Image (cartoon, rainbow, N blue to C red; front, top):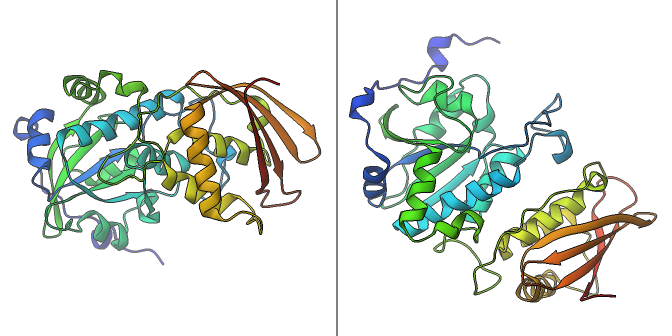
Length: 332
């Protein structure tokens, strides 16, 4: 069934570029709440392309965040935190790059399939024009075509990865308030005394469940080829979740990608993670080797100076979850 474009099109309010607020003025407005931030996911590894059938594909079949993208997402989270901007609902398309952009910035995300719809739908319209609860702002992490189609005045090519447009719902229309460019994010985080935030801890202090009281220095996590293909990709996901420094992210990973153990509860696993994070900091991969059938051994260097060896045993068949994780801190 083909619906007429007039039925599906979102009514948009046109606003001239000379009426847009500056990035600094938008932060002042955002402290009041009532706005929606349409954010294009941060920088990705352009050497990899999305396989047919997305978003219902595995991580290794998608274009994912680069190390710069991880840094940029954390920077944006710190800009909002430092500016005292109240963030309520955080939604993202089902793609890994959008979900992880939200997680690195705010420590949480709810998946919204409407945010990857190639054609406008009534569901997408309702999502975009939903008013945030009083005193809060909504963040929708999505893709360039959603922003270009729905934010008045935004044309193809106007927003690169990591950039955002702030809109306000007026009935069933959207009004564009202003645009955050990458140069704005980096300038604003530096002005707030967070120049180190480009390599700093993730998250929005009001909303994250922190696994450690001290900031964690981010170490670029370069994945070796061994971890790029299924079923080993789950090991890469574990290390990436570890490096967020967020217990809430690790909880979701354990729930989704590990086999429950009768000998260790989820809370006990999270306590072990918290202790490792405090002792090691974030991880850089020194080497990765398949040391047995369905077993990967990762030698890492922690940002706090200690090496550690992770021996990870995997499920032998799909969905290839993690069966166990053993960690030796220090040298052999």
